Length: 357
Picture 1 (cartoon, one colour):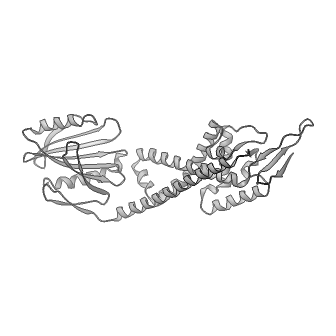
Picture 2 (cartoon, helix red, strand yellow; picture 1 turned 180 degrees about the horizontal axis):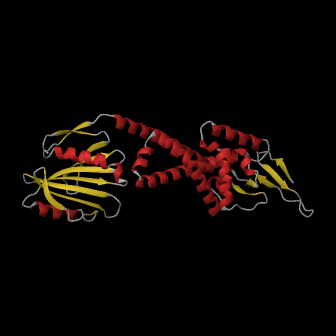
């Protein structure tokens, strides 16, 4: 049989029934607001960590998923899916380290009624209740109702519904230094969350506007020919380490870069130039021997390779025109299928400014 006493600062004191005629010491239970802000603190950073990790990993293997993640609906659904995954991460951290950052900062600890620590499975079971009965599966409006219900229960001296199966959140006294430290950390995290939300909205807006926007015109300064470039590309002049001018087109999510350049071949033949260029980029890329042939009636060399220290793919074509070597190089990061069509279309248009089909 358990008895509960209300402490003046909102902490509930739980007394277990005396064992063997001896009175058990009072065990302080955390008040509602201390529990609430600790949970928010932990959940915020855990959702960000899970979302960033999942987005990166899934984006590396599936072009369709990456496109879906960029849609407003996809982003919202992924956000909802991140909550149970974040609570799974929360359970793992609590089981492995004994606590989570938010609870540790506020002196809270989750345990059983008799004070024992929880294992991973117990943390997962409790967090399942937190997700459903406490957070309302993360669904807007519903989560407000479920959180209000749990807050009312705690204020009335009851346990949260997901703690009724033998779980308790206990609190030890903390000083003002610890409280102020937590407040500072909470405000920094809150500002970061607001900033990330604003960035995500702006990125979604720009992506939608870019995909629906018109193409822009680009003129090759070496030939004077103009082509239309899809709005998914951003153009900027650049410069190589040796000072040679480059025309760089970057896909808006930076999964692909296409570079056009021209250089005087001097006395070198195309095979000699191709060999020299391959040697020059050997530190960054692994390129095969490539193949020679004709491209639009002109001598050409083409090769496809990979990054030496990363999973990028590089495709390059050299074309000899009136003693000058024109080069178009495309560098793509996984998943390649996400940018294949965009890269192929742009490369074709850029070659249209150099040599007619």
